[in-house]
Length: 393
Length: 231
Ligand code: SF4
Ligand code: SF4
Image 1 (cartoon, each protein chain N blue to C red):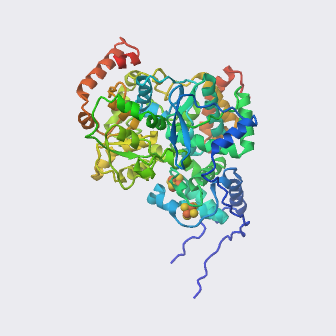
Image 2 (image 1 turned 45 degrees about the vertical axis):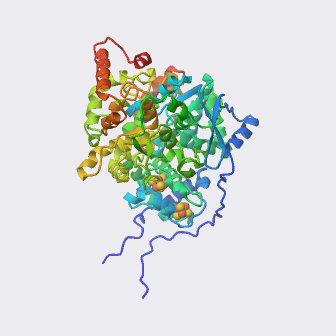
């Protein structure tokens, strides 16, 4: 018997939009469009400085990774809450003798807020990106982007600017008011791509043996899912089925890279959730079946924070916790003999990392004593700040 | 037995729902984010929010593709803030971007000051304040045990030692506590101009008038000094 359902409002017939499969094919290289727009005088395209390292992206294209002369687009989450992440990236450049610029004329990409609260829009996001690119261009240095979200978001912005002339016009107008040109770099480069490109140089300077260390790698969503065709893949790493950054670095350093079933899952960061709805974040982070590695490595701000900080509360649910979490930049720096506190700043991390340091052959007790001495001298006013010279002493 | 309510927003005028729907579909990003839907559910299988909430990226794509104005309205009110914006759903074989559709829907909710947006952003104002006023979203001085009780003793230890620990790191740009690094004043002025010129300040006003007033206050001085009076 038909049931009479109370249809309160009935939708009008759809307007019959014809859905075309018009997304750019992966065979289309957005960089060609960037150069076409440069040829038309639409924007300035700073080139990757020589010497660069060629790497291969998902569909077999070559991407240029600048070795040095890079403008460090810092990450607010890294510098703010896990500062050893940024410090290790800088330290690696210094130890490898590669020139870099750490600017004050830089804002964050503001995409954390864009994804969390939506109190922004395409034009604002594009203007923030282009302002930073223009600031880098003024210094003559080429952007190296520390945050995975900034990296992914800037590639979204590049697509939007390429596809929408009205957005370009709007952002050009805004930049004009700031006295800056429209600038779009030849490549958008993530720091983990640089670490991947220099992994053999790092391994050549390795002072600690990592062969007894088992790692799991959490690939960052905004690195390889957003604008996926631009991420690095390598047939020698997971048969080219998974992004090669981070894993290739751990392999080059002699660590055992263990596999696990939930590698594709997001960490649970959630942008808004990590700050105001952490029940979701915690639950998701600790549901990951990471099978007791010595350390979990990742290459983005939110992933380190989420996977590290979510472990404490999970003790109440008898979850296996106590797995140290860090970026591969910190891991690589430790391999090269970086100080675990002065450089890698591990005291900002929550999960227990000291057994890992012992396994690596690092005397954390002595290192902590040295760091506490530094802090004492700062407290007494004998020293204003820790310097690179102190770190290298 | 009472029948389930089919349209819990039946009281909202159709024109209002249609207006929001038109705004979502008129966004220049919309055509780049939706190409129809196979209903295959690949996006749902990858979606962390689908595992923890009554939320589905497939439903988002479907409702918009079917031009189901009432359902899209309901999703704007009830669903979109569950998405964690991870973009795992970009695995979609139709090259849809359900997470991107959610971003657009959220912006519409914010622009219209919908109650759902205000509720989702409750407790989030201090973060918006931080990013808009300093150009960096999370500052070291946000790490306080009362803000992050679930982070365990490390939040207290960091909070207790914050000033010294910030000085005990070598990069000169990072000896800061109220911003992630030392952003230059000129850079901040340029950022404030961007917020004003792109309508972001109006969006803030729609969801949080108090925050808007504070931000205008903070920005006014720097903008005036730089020769850009707000009036
Ligand atoms: S972006 Fe949102 S809808 Fe897409 S997979 Fe992530 S949580 Fe789900
Ligand atoms: S993956 Fe794409 S095609 Fe499949 S259900 Fe989701 S939106 Fe539709």
